[in-house]
Image (cartoon, one colour):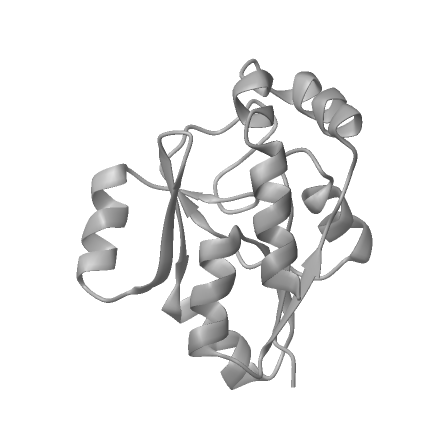
Length: 152
């Protein structure tokens, strides 16, 4: 049974929008970045300090940790084990490293959904929500290529 629907794709491709439209409950990731104005702790992410995430990882409580734009993002073992125990499905947005780690731990429990959008559409979405859109767009081609490799 699939318990994890993992969305993967370039920044601004619409992963969060698709996750919302599909109505699949979210697995909340930990992050060390500060919340955006429209985000809240426990709804969008679980906001933690960098040190707390590193400590949890060192204590074996995390399945994967990724650094993106200077901030850590992580998935807890507890959140995924709860899904499996309760036999429910939830979704998460991951990068290629996160997908690889979850596939390694739960090969028959994860469905990977690759999300694509043109560079123009990604740029438009990112400019609406962040002041560092160009930095995130710099990695578009590489990210898209990496994501395709993980989906296939």
